[in-house]
Image 1 (cartoon, rainbow, N blue to C red):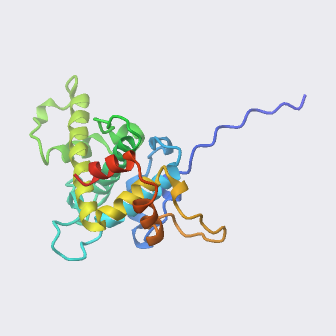
Image 2: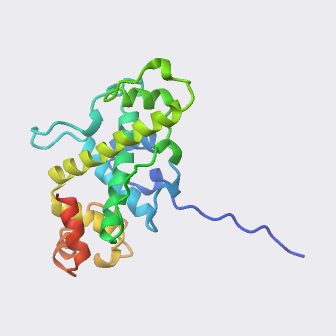
Image 3: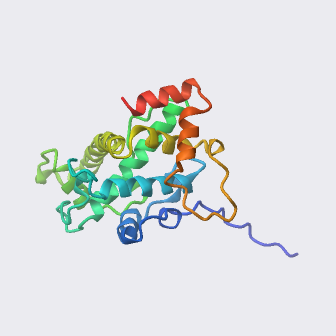
Length: 239
């Protein structure tokens, strides 16, 4: 008699709302993560993963402290580098995709599972990257005949090139983060994504974002509760 429709399942919070960071970078972050589905994160702690991606992304787009680095990954610090007229957005989006691949691979290693060999095409996850932008990205590395565009199988070929590019970019961001953050901090951050039980309980009144981790949390993760999984994950991250 008083029946009501079943409530719609609630999806985890999307990247913009779940990832506080430097206010000056909010507009770029929103542009880079527009359209990404919350379900793109294959983890129970989606909000925490997005928070880490934002934290790591900011480290990559900021100028290096020592001035002796090769610069922000994928040219993210240079307006218009993408060659698509999109300014920072395309490079920022690709960096986000590479960071998602990095954390997924790390968590697979830490769980004793096979490392994912493919990086999903971010467009399949809802990312706002059109075919012309994807084509401009892959042309930085590979020669693609413009006459092929529109032919049967071209979309699949382009997606494959883009995935190969992101596979290389995931390795590049790992190297840059190890260099900029140090292996200990980066390991602790990634390990904490599925091991919140190894963090100091947060004060109920503490509304601070989950990253950066405190020095106590980093020390506890790195020096406490040893195990083969940690050793394997550390070796993989610092290889």
